[in-house]
Length: 438
Image 1 (cartoon, rainbow, N blue to C red):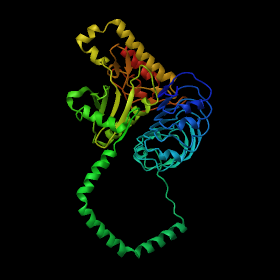
Image 2 (cartoon, rainbow, N blue to C red):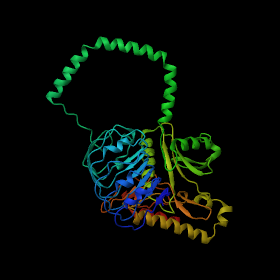
Image 3 (cartoon, one colour):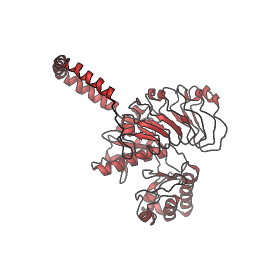
Image 4 (cartoon, rainbow, N blue to C red):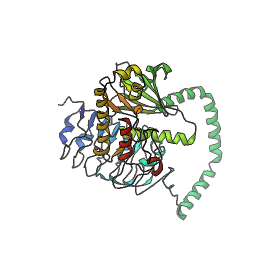
């Protein structure tokens, strides 16, 4: 047992508290206990494991506060859907490799630590009691309102949040006045320093440009779990020859899909999002990208596509999935050769797989997940004709007891007619689309 590297027992009915003995597994790098009925508090021995990269304790009944110390290798932390209270510990700021943080649907209070590392890509702190300003890093500034909503008094330059107030007392004004007077006495010195810096910068410009390139490379925001992120990013770009068309296996409204054969023999599907210049479409594309990450990092099912990781970059963004050799159901149905071999037994097996995936999303996830775009293009098959539901860019979490309204999403011919009129989202939307598919 001490040589165990991965422990995944999610979506069962395990109860009682998390065994502190897991902390004896010193080389464990992935622990997934999500979707159970675990209670008690989070053992410090577990979160301090030195090699732990991916920790998922979501959708349980865990109480108490978030531990103050975590292992320094942690890349993904999901504590959503529990009963955690208290403040977000400042020690999370020190996790330099942390790229995904989901603390939603708890009872956390206080302010958010302001010094998270820029390596953080995805964050969800919705449905808590948090207040105060958002940290000034892209993960928070580019987050959708869905990832921040239902808190006590958060503020920031995000659509849906109030701007942070700036109050200055008379004492503060006096202090500022004194500071400006003191700075005035140093104007001459500062001018001289400025001139000297300008001369030095002109001399060092070539060197600085080279450094800027390196910094831009380090600025790639990625998270590819269970692998070295930077290495995998470079391998994917190399394997697709910078996304050459000869590796293209699918084209969609939001992005193109490429097949990448990596050096270690692993084959993945890479969905590269289209570059969008229109501001409205860019916002939609960004929300779709974050929605897919948020949904697929919190759920695991044999009939749902597996997300290996993602990359967010100023030039392009992509998602990395498990590659399924059978392609899409739409491709098979529209190819006479493939369709003739697609007998009734195989068709029934596909329908059962999609039904199992929807049953899991609607009844076993907390909160329930509505896919909103079930169609033949979004059902992928392996060589055994086992169905895998994909494309969660328009998926929506359904809060029990509350009506959920949104803009129209889906594929014409598959989407429920009443959705275009009422804009109310519930499980019936997926059930109608499933009926058309079946």
